[in-house]
Length: 305
Ligand code: GLN
Image (cartoon, rainbow, N blue to C red; front, side):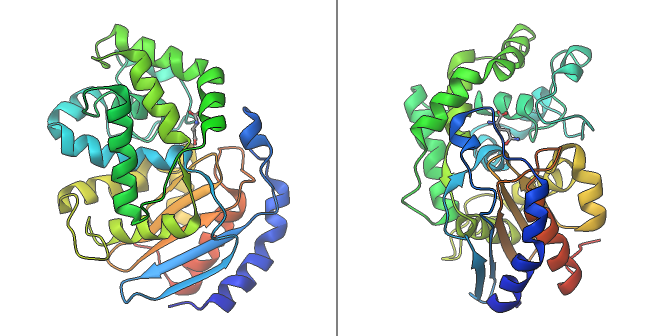
């Protein structure tokens, strides 16, 4: 296991990279993020934990919620049903792109882009919108082993007010029967799930859960091995959006980024890694987080390929 001092030195070595990026600025709550924040946490199977920098700083999970609620949706629905409505292919387009929806009868290419994730949100079971979101939050609490998780109300309102591109995709999908339930309800769950506050420490825990194919550190199996593998495969092919191919070459591990600046990553069977750096590259991936993961992967020969 890499020790915390080495992680600290890697943070220092990559700090300059963060200055090249830009924080997400579509809502004030994200725009106010500090570009200098930079943190990492790694947890392995032998209960060893290393960390450095702002690994306890809270930020919004954003798109990292996508693979997580996919697991809950698979618990709630037949897998065949989900993938009759959503594909498993990378798009090569930005995460919020709408263009392929029109040529695919609204079927989103995969659950890691906005359109696919909103369709997944529409499949979460519950008697009311509140109950559905609470089930999402409880699920993420369980796999992060953090009972204190909550969502940021200001960011949620910002997402809801500015989310017209997401709204248009959702109505497009409703029109073609991809979304079967209430569109606004699905969007509300999606906006709330994006606003859940998380840390690099929490992400490392979730990474370890996936690394161990769906079992928590206290031994509870939450999802099947099959589901964990499915999610990790989609993280490899689609988790870094239209940067997934390059990330697979340069870093070579399953990962999922969010515009809040987090990256959830893991080495199958071995460790979970959470990073945070809100300055993003042009594709919406944490620029410092990416560089850090590349260095660590090279140093420890982590590529799964
Ligand atoms: N809330 C963001 C959106 O819906 C999430 C996108 C992301 O993290 N890439 O556009």
